[in-house]
Amino acid sequence: MLAPSALHLRRTPMRWLAATTLSLTLVAGAVSAAAADDDAARGLPSAEDVANAEAAAQGARRSVASVQAELLLANERLRSSAVSAAQAAEAFNGARWAADEARAAALAAGDAARAARRDLETSRSAYAETLIESYQLSPELQGFAAVVEADGIERVLTTTATMQVTEEVMDSKQDAFSASSLLAASADQRAEDALARAEELEANAAAARNTAAAAEASAGSEAAAIAATKTTLIEELAQLQGISYELAEKRQSALEQRAAQAAAEAAAKEAADAAAAEAAAAEAAAAEVAAAAAAAAEAAAPVTQAPTPAPTKTKTAKPTPTPAPAPVATATPTPVTPTPVATPTPTGTASPKPTATPTPTPTPTSTPTVAPPPPPTTAPAVTGDTSAVVAFARAQIGDPYKWGAAGPNAWDCSGLTAGAWAAGGKSLPHYSVAQYTGSTAIAAAALAPGDLVFWGSSSKATSIYHVALYIGGGQIIHAPRTGRPVVQESMYSWIAPNFYARP
Image 1: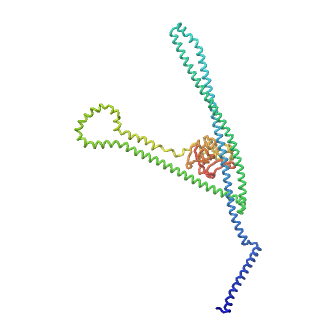
Image 2: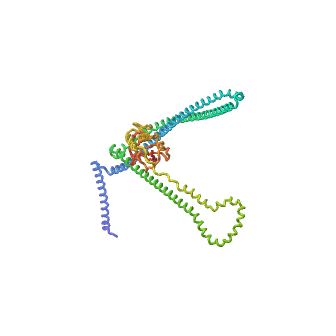
Image 3: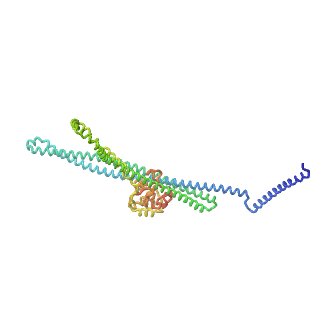
């Protein structure tokens, strides 16, 4: 057991340590408080201020991302609105084109009906004259008996021949009149049907015009609203990033251009890969057809040669047994006597059995089916003055877009391509679907200056709603939409196209 003095000595350092620790803590707290007061006095941020600033910065970063996402959504709304307006505009162009075609058909049917009526009147007049002549001749025929008694048999024959000729002529005129009547009635009916069809399609075109006008007005309002929304969002973005509006707008525009360029490059790569795959598939198909043709030819050759060596082998095998049956050959005349009696046996086609003609007959039938000529995989040659086509389109750059317009100072997409190709010497309808169906479809890899590039909402050509003129190097000239004039840009700057054709 420790002595009281030792215990006192042991407790004293512990008490001193505790007292020292407490005093240091109090001093540190006092110093921290004094320092904080001093920082506050000097305008320096406190630790709490720093933490709050970091939290605010973290929230600001999230807000910038959300604002940029809203800008992307605004651009997507603008694109969707433009597509809807383009679809409505091209639907009107299609309805107007169909109505024009129907009106031209109605005019042609009317001309044909008038010509048929003129032919009918000619046949009617000829038939009437023949009837009059027959009526004039009837009194003479009624006095046939008196003529016989007075003039003799020669006059009878002459009168009979005249009567027969007259009847034949009258029958012919009647047949011609009946045929002309039927043709005229049919032509009148076709003209009426064509006129009714034209009027129906013109009514459809008028309705399509109203729909296109409404879609264009809606797209314009949507574009204005989206522009205002984007302005507000860019202002908010500038505040969040602590920069000017002009700089924020430039940054956002650069981001959008970079994204569009990346999308264009990806679409171009995808198109190139698809074209390469298509070319490889075509090459493989051609090689397969050639291999099949070679196999068919090789298989056909032994079939034709097989019958020829077969008799030679049988003849070489027969000489050894032939000496023994030689005396038996004398007995062969005895069965020959009943064979002439069996006359039905020759009619029983014993001769076709030895001839091996049925075996080669299937080989010629298989040869044409296996080796048909391969379908043409190359694009047709470019015709027309494509330099004039491209030059015309380039001269319209900057002209405003207007749906349904075909120049000279405003254009829609199909109006511009039709005008450009008119300068190159070819007439194209003012309708993108008809421009595609009236041209030769080609692959993207075969595009050449002057070709047409199309956008559709599906894999069907009837879904096409936009067309542009390809000028080479992946570039197009087109009239995009309301608010954007005729411009030259990458063919992938908007949406990847899905149809290509050569006028």
